[in-house]
Length: 337
Image (cartoon, rainbow, N blue to C red; front, top):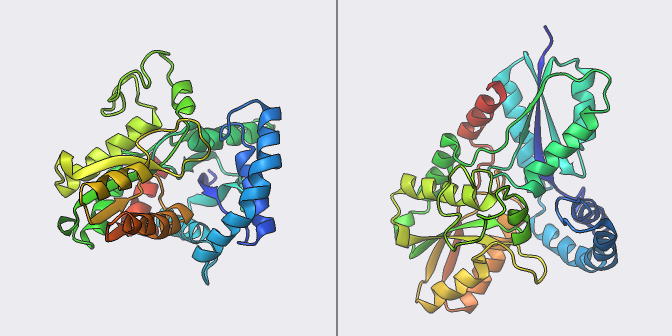
């Protein structure tokens, strides 16, 4: 029998922090019909005519702030995760890494698995909480590409792992290094999504966003909801750390544009906490399995500076899963399940 194939997929990163490469990355990312889910003509005019030309130089400067001797932190840690998982699984498996946008591409990674004559493929999108714009986009592209093969091996997907025990333990372990009891409040800041994308995922057409607390508890109706899964991750982390409900807030960062996104926005929460006299905040970003622009810069730099300008003192990021051995164990379990 042949090897079993495992495909790890993260979001992506520019090939370099230079404007031209950032432009290519943003163009591919934002032209994805699941990321900006509006008619193609409108999306093309918006992305290619407005967002990419104006945003690329600014985003390039931000990437230059986090780029280091290893290159992109997201790609660096993703490559380590793939390498360690290959060592963990052994010679009976072939592990390949891909990025949904830019390099290494999903098409290239699938070609390697095909050339390796794998007998099956397990696809693990590296997004703990399911969203159409992330996990759904990976699944769609993999199915489109493999669907063109003359021989299609058995293929399966990990939909989400928002409640993964090892993941919760790692985040809690990383948090304890910073002594959570010394902070005034804890934020679980997830990457934001437009509200319309949550509504599209509501197959009942009558549950999502009808009440203020519809995402607070995971149930059969909202089990695939990104926000509900995020709240569940936060609940499990709070339980692991012994945090009372009044000690933490779930919020959403990285809003783009003026339309309503999932709320509360992290920036609004910072303003509220500063007004309440809170001085020190501990911030998790549990939508990411590797530190990246949204954690290293957006939280550590931007939110820290914003909070200080409001009268706060310090915003401390809880490191992501990165190359933690327990996360490799979690990936191993997903790969062989």
